[in-house]
Image (cartoon, rainbow, N blue to C red):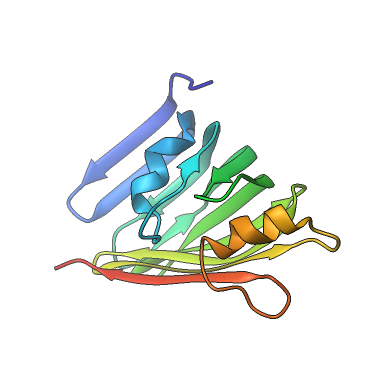
Length: 161
């Protein structure tokens, strides 16, 4: 369930700092940020952990970790069990860069996400595990066109104006 956030958050023009931040939010709150035309329903909760994180828009240090346990998405043609999805985010100059991975579930999730003042981008691959049932392959195909192995690639680049 969602929890009361803990920690210290500092926000100013082009500056954010987090210290000992821990919070749990409904995963559905992130659905609007997904690159898909018809974003699927997201299940359960995402936890945020940032022992020390600082970013000025031009650089920074520390790490921000997101963990989506028992992750599930429900595209138009079924439900996908993603297991536990982890996103490790760190400042890289003028952008925040994150590595995405998962453990468990019916698929393998790998990729990257990025956020900067001028927009956000991502490149994710969701691949079925060996022996995946046809229903899972159909559900993946509703997200994007699958490759010869049934994997789908979600790539986006949104620019702020």
